[in-house]
Image (cartoon, rainbow, N blue to C red; front, side, top):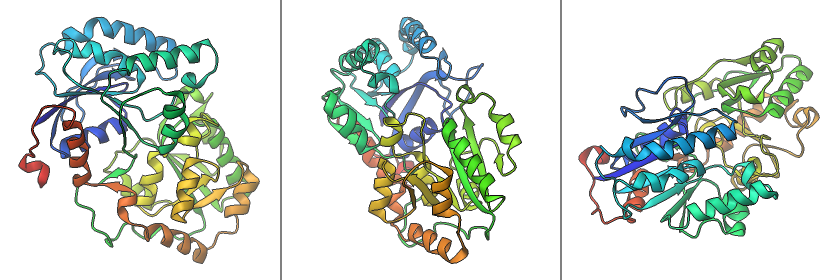
Length: 390
């Protein structure tokens, strides 16, 4: 069985849980080590007890650098008692900085995979800091065996033109994970609530202040014909008073975190539209990414809303689905959605549901392909345990 050491920047990130689930479903054994954004160590992630590397803070770049430097001193001893991994997967640049140190107790033969699912705005700066970070990334990635990323635009706009990583590239989209085999033609979603009010769901990592203000303005213009439902983890460092702002808006509600995948069907079946727009790093990462919420919402029949000039917008144009905005304004939203009625919504939703489910989801067969790709970097022979094939 392939043994993967997974180094992550935030062990409580729901996307980390999804990747662990996919690796194990594909037949791999996983050891998890990483930082946390909580006050106390995390006891359990998918039945794994993470090796704790310390706490970090969202949006505090200097503090995270200090945490990486501190972990570099201790990571060898913290990992010294574990069996030798067959491959190390480092999620994000800060974990790539620790990967070589993590490999030291086991010898230089353990291949390193760089998993980069966001291009941070700091590495795109043209000043001394940006150039230094890109040079650091090129240095750290000089002998990685594989780059895993989630959007073709990351490759086209960053990795290729800047020449950051010479390794082969594996595109693993942020798709929803299905525990069972995907069967084309199976029902994908329940009936949506009857509108109006029409509900727009903004779920996941809530970090975009501009989106929050835009949705609030739009909901006020519509005077109750549209409601905005927020769920997930708000990045409070990006909002002066997130909870106070939401409470003051008559048609906004924040319903807290949710479990992925356990709650996904329920939360998306409760809304009509999925907000797939992010201005957090406008002109850069926000225009290039294909976010989790795009796939999750479409998987359960929510009609996606996106900007037309982004990678998400281009993807939706290719699929001929969704609502694409020409500009980010309450007026543009009103023009696109303000006269919504049942027949038009049924057509929009029907086009989403007509797409092949594999457009939105990975199943166990995809997980096995991913694990085999990792196995190909090692000398470990291919074999699947019975539970991985169930």
